[in-house]
Image (cartoon, rainbow, N blue to C red):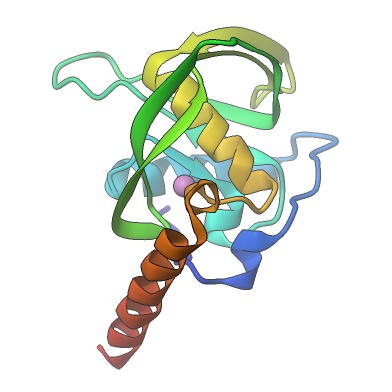
Length: 172
Ligand code: NI
């Protein structure tokens, strides 16, 4: 079931999320809802705080090509355990900041550890869009948005646009 996505600025998007000890049925159903919400948007990643749940849960699927097999990943407590010196700049966006995009530079390759929906520990080296996306989503769990990498003036400009967007949305 789809859940409503929170838009910046929202205090819940600035909070550090708490770790998951055991993968309960509630958390599995949260992850399922998050995947449905992400695919519907459509987006390549979504973090639990974006649907108002302050737990360390991320979903992603960076397979974007038409006709390719989707690869939905559900990650509990994801963390970057190693990062390359090589960097990659990618024009990022975020489902919590519709229509806002900006170049962000991050490590090009990261090794990530997480727990899957069965509580099984996983580890994978990611590059390309997967590396960018997983780092962007993990940032969300620490209350960090991609605009936090931008110069203050640019960030304020985007935030002003978002305040206006939310005001218009509320007016209907
Ligand atoms: Ni995002």
